[in-house]
Image (cartoon, rainbow, N blue to C red):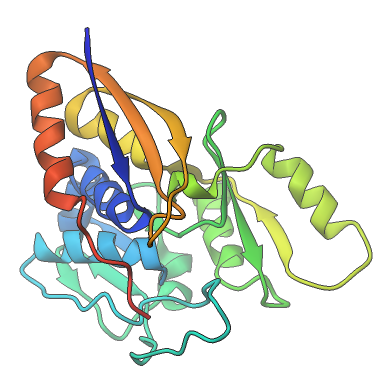
Length: 248
């Protein structure tokens, strides 16, 4: 087996994750035959662009989020979009969002929600909660647990944590103090590592992380696999490596 190494910024990772999910045959089928919900989020903005492109719809990624962690001095340059993306049987439903469609979702449908923490070993995801009623996670969990809707959390490996998702939830939610709460999801995390496997059949490992000049959150990967697969992988990495930072 041969190997290659490359570095990905969080922005490039978002592109890779989106392409990996958009390549999934079952997800493509759901887009055309069932219902797909993409909850507002910066990583999900890239996924929305990929899936909407497949049904002939253009999408502006700017402002597609509910809450973000940012420097307080950074100002928003684009208006925040009002709606999540809902695709029903190949058609964009601009008047709907996660709240209006959650109760009708079934086991053939997909819901995508970003995450704030990921355990790479278990592929479990955690979501920070600022809404006193838990926001979008309540209808999504009801759909996932009650009706077996496929709940997937596209999340970059820069959000990996060392402690288990459930222990972090207990720590955050069962102690006195201020700040956000922490929701351990029953959904499944999907990272760059998953995307590399789905797109090229290669096995990815994190070698190191961090950098300067906009690469502070970058990750250095090593991928092993067959030579042809690695060549295709390298070609895509060259294409997406210069992806600009997500603009607010």
